[in-house]
Length: 142
Ligand SMILES: C[S@@+](CC[C@H](N)C(=O)[O-])C[C@H]1O[C@@H](n2cnc3c(N)ncnc32)[C@H](O)[C@@H]1O
Image (cartoon, rainbow, N blue to C red; front, side):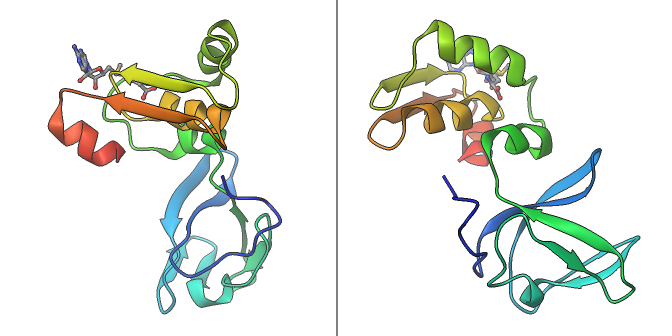
């Protein structure tokens, strides 16, 4: 898991927050740009900033650079299947008493929404094995 104190590095996957209903996952790549209705944002300007930082575009527009928590990942992942949302994920994690150190086997990775929360719940010493018989979905989730 990425600590919110950590600085953004080239190659990190981050969540770009434009508005509460507009967020996307982006891989930081020095030399690349993000263009949206608020202007042009250079990835290079993000490197070295703390997660949670607000950054400005060439036009003075702004976005926030967030760490990819399981909750945010659930909201931005591309839906390849129906997915579990936070309310159900919370129930599953507490009902199964998933705690750090647990070793889990999940059958039916789907889009990986549940998987990321399971991985956080068992960290730092546990492990989640997840399986999907749909090869393409398994590859995308990976
Ligand atoms: C609704 S999706 C799971 C969504 C996932 N929990 C999430 O939150 O993103 C169900 C997945 O189970 C997989 N699946 C169904 N039957 C399976 C089986 N017998 N073995 C492995 N995967 C299976 C499907 O391919 C599909 O990707």
